[in-house]
Image (cartoon, rainbow, N blue to C red; front, top):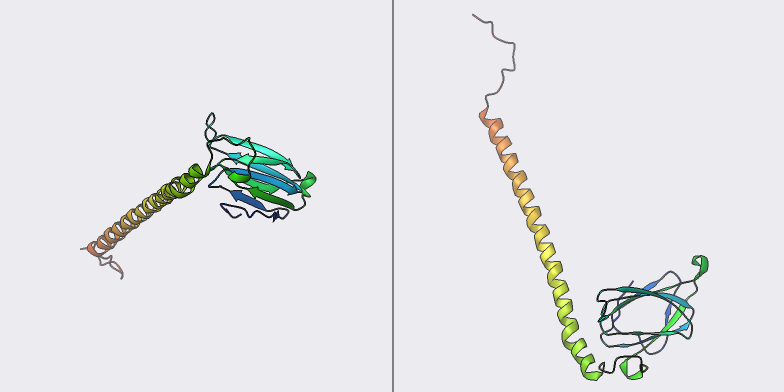
Length: 171
C-alpha cells in the first residue's frame, strides 16, 4: 500500500487485491471510472472528528474528500473476485458545489504548505520519542544485566574454592 498525496488527473488503475491510501492536501473529488471499490474515509468532519465512514462506489459514482482526510480505497466485489478498478482524482477547481465554499486556493495553499508539514513533523517527533524511549529501556536493561553479571563474577572469585581431592581425615 502506498500513500500518494495526489492522484493523476487521468484514471489510475487499482488491481484486484490492492489497496490505496490517500491523504490529500487539498479538497477534491475521487471518481470511480471503472469497477467497484470499498472506500473507508476517516477524520476531519466538524461534527464528528476522527469518525470513520465506509462507502461502496461503482463506476460513475464519486465522493468528495476534504483536505487532510484519510481515505483507504480497495477493489470490492462479490466472493472476493473483484476486478480492477480505475479511479480519477479532481482537485478543488474541478470539484462540484458540494464542497465547502471556503475550500479555495488560499486554504489549499495553507493546508499543503503549513498544516500538513506540521502534522508530518508532529508524527515524526512522536515516532522519534517512542524510539528514544525504547532505546533507553534497552540500555537500562543491558546495564542491569551487566551489573548482575559483574556481581556474579565477583561472588565467584571471592568465595573459596572447594577441595577437589578426597576429604582430609578428621583429627
